[in-house]
Amino acid sequence: MMPDVGGLTPAGDVDGAAMYIDSMLKRINDAERPAGWAEEKLIVATLEDEEELFTGICTLIFLYLTWWRKGFEAAGKDVVAEIVPSVTGTLRQMTRVEPEAIPTMAAMMTAAAMGISPDRWRLRNGGWRPEDITAVQATALTLAHEINTVSDDPDAALRLIIDLIADVEDNREEP
Image (tube, rainbow, N blue to C red; front, side, top):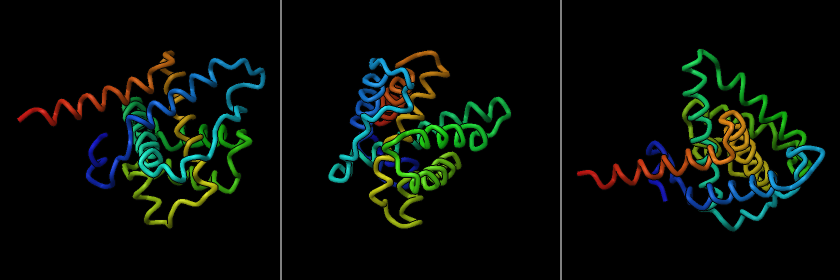
């Protein structure tokens, strides 16, 4: 497990969350679906009782958007203007994502892009609602898919997290 994200909120089970999202991406990418991956119905709202895993998925969203923000800033672009609309558009296509949760995901991604962890943002704006559970998973899944696509590497999002975890662990060991 990783330490607090920026000292703001617990990171949760980031290892487990990264493996969960990666395994879902692999199932989606391995499936032959003519309608495209956005129509996938494999997302299941099973995280209500898995708080550490859910918090880890929120941390992934924060880390993925931090990666996007740094890349966009280097290119003189705005991550909120580019990535948030793209992800929310994909969420609208997903049959398991409640339409009421999509504005919440847009706000959560905007906050994460500005350096506020999703859990901390949600805490300030009320607790997670049942319809948010699947939407948060779908948001992390979509962000990871986009990272893999832009990197032209089906393991780029997972490798990003593995490298970050390794860096954190290496820094812990140094005196």
